[in-house]
Amino acid sequence: MKVDYLIVGQGLAGTLLANEFYRQNKSFMVIDNPDQSKSSAVAAGLINPIIFRRMTKSWLVDEAFPQMESAYLQLENLLQEQLYYPVKIMKSLSEDDLNFWKEKTFANKLESYIEVEPDLFFENANIKSAFSFACINTAGRLDIQKLISAFKKFLSQQNSIRNERIDYEKLIIQPDSVIYDNIFARKIIFCEGPSASENPFFKNLKFKHSKGELLEVKIPELKLNRIVSDEVFVLPVGDDQYKVGATYSWDKLNHETTDSAREELLSKLGKIISLKPEIVNQKAGIRPTMHDRKPVIGLLPDNPQIGIFNGLGSKGVLLGPYFAHQFADYLNGNSDYIHPEADIKRYFKHK
Ligand SMILES: Cc1cc2nc3c(=O)[nH]c(=O)nc-3n(C[C@H](O)[C@H](O)[C@H](O)COP(=O)(O)OP(=O)(O)OC[C@H]3O[C@@H](n4cnc5c(N)ncnc54)[C@H](O)[C@@H]3O)c2cc1C
Image (cartoon, rainbow, N blue to C red; front, side, top):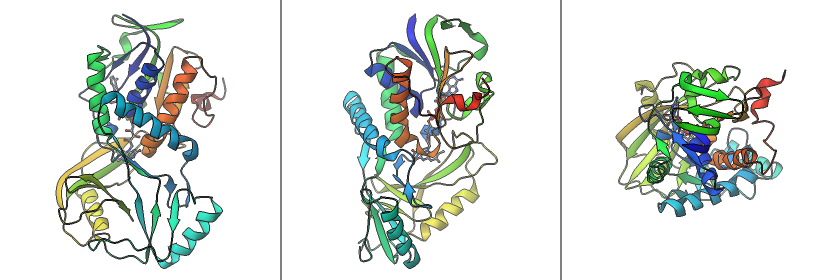
């Protein structure tokens, strides 16, 4: 079988890149290991355009947000599933926060994303009252798990996916192509999420993954139709269920859930709501992240048949479509631009 691209991994990154190839009429095959934990299987899918700690816009948000909306709407249409939910975020503010928020909203030109009003009263009797709430108007969530499973089905229907683990040793690299089993591809693009740190082709890259845990809870009386954020977020997903997250840790990078994360999340949730949640599930995953927290995109300088699309970190839902589009355009010769801060070349400066 001859294809333009062989994609390794069908998490969020592999899905978005395969979709771009599909849209640009390029042939491709995806190989995805179904027995491996995916970051995308754990992610809450929250889309937040603001970095609350610093009160700045999230990196590239002005360009990435419209690109994201159009990509997920196109995928909804292709897969005939609702995937993207615009939802406002209510951020609780103390009296001190309020002045800081007002000042930074103006200074950092956040007005198109945020309303900060001292008397903006968020009415939900089960949310503990804060001094005030700011409303992030342009926010939402993606049902990542539904996207991945619906896209997998679509790929199966097109005979474009093999469910197995790729064995690096079986990959034959030729001057202008790669061969894997019976697949002849012009290029192979690795979208392996956190396990890319074990890929021998990417030894030069500096990964700094983080572990995250979240809770899925049921709270029938809460009746919340917005995301509420304080030290954790409470994100409504329907049927009286909510995702509460997330924790961050950089040691013990495994997929085990822990008592300490559960207690931390419950205690932070208890500062937001006065009701007792029923825990439906606890999940742990690893965010694929680079040392400088920017994605990594591009082809190996010495082996341009081999590429990578990774490092989406905690902003995969927002940044994924923007970079998938940019990378596909680059690979297909429509553009020669990769954002310099995301370009793999930053790890090969000496070349
Ligand atoms: C607790 C938690 C909460 C999160 N919440 C959010 C959120 O609210 N919003 C947000 O934007 N992001 C969030 N994220 C981050 C988000 O999950 C990631 O940005 C995104 O899912 C990364 O997707 P990926 O495709 O790069 O990696 P993955 O989803 O890990 O996919 C990699 C795929 O590659 C496959 N694979 C790997 N190696 C091989 C191989 N050798 N052969 C074959 N297949 C292989 C794996 O099986 C897997 O399917 C969260 C992450 C965590 C852990």
